Image 1: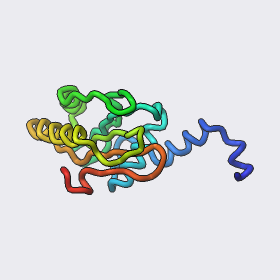
Image 2 (image 1 turned 180 degrees about the horizontal axis):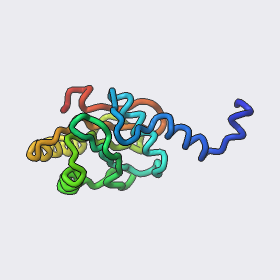
Image 3 (image 1 turned 90 degrees about the horizontal axis):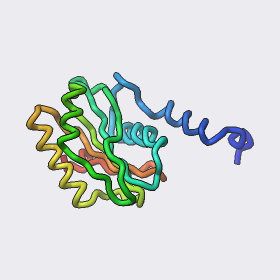
Amino acid sequence: MNSKLKDISDNEIRELFQSRFQRKRGEKLQSSRETAEHIRAFLTKYPRDVEHFGIIYLDTQLNIIETEIISSGSLASASVFPREIIKRVLALESGSIICFHNHPSQELLPSSSDKALTNKLKIALQSIDTQLIDHLVVSHENEEFFSFSDQRLI
């Protein structure tokens, strides 16, 4: 290991990672890979052994308004209520969203529940003229991710 790295604390490394990859309010996410990097950087402050479900709220120009966790659960699930997401979309005047969650198991393929929730959210958001841009499943352990949009599931 590089001797310089030994002198840097885990917190400093985490902060450097966040500052490099986590996008700020008003910035755009240009691709699913950039979005996954933003999500991974955002999730560094959360425990890795539970599932977290979050939303990136975007304005009508697809600029970031806010990124937040809306639910944290267990090793294999997190309860998500579309009604609560709709309330927050309206409060932030968001024109579109990207939803995301991690799989602590490192399995990136979405479950049937993930697919059903994505469809339910898409329909609910359409009723208020808000677009679901993507749903990403990310891993803490590597750079891999699953994008519903890239796989044409949205």
